[in-house]
Image (cartoon, rainbow, N blue to C red; front, side, top):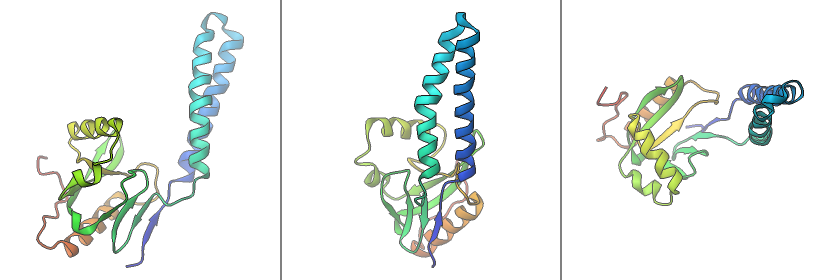
Length: 174
């Protein structure tokens, strides 16, 4: 199989960068023309100027692949857990939260991939599970690619590699 390489959407990061610049501009206007609300202007400048602009600029310039799917398995750079081999994937299902698509991976031994997780990552995993997701999920917001096509490919590849495992396309509780 030819590797499928998916990168982050440039246009999404351009729009987020423009939005951050606009909030900084609004913050400056508030400071100049509304002295009694200058703290709101400073908060806008600090949050979007110090946080948003550098982050979205970096993401705009970062052209490394975000998601790679090949004969070995799946690699999602944002997860920071390395390759997930097909033999580890028992199934997958799509979940949408606040118009953001996720592919939830049902793994044989998810703890194997999470043994080096930080306390923050463990808290986020617990929150994801409260929302009906798995411990390991592919966040597909801001990437080029169709969620349903990616899910179909994952189910197909995991069923070929792990023929006795359930390849479920929906969460068993829904």
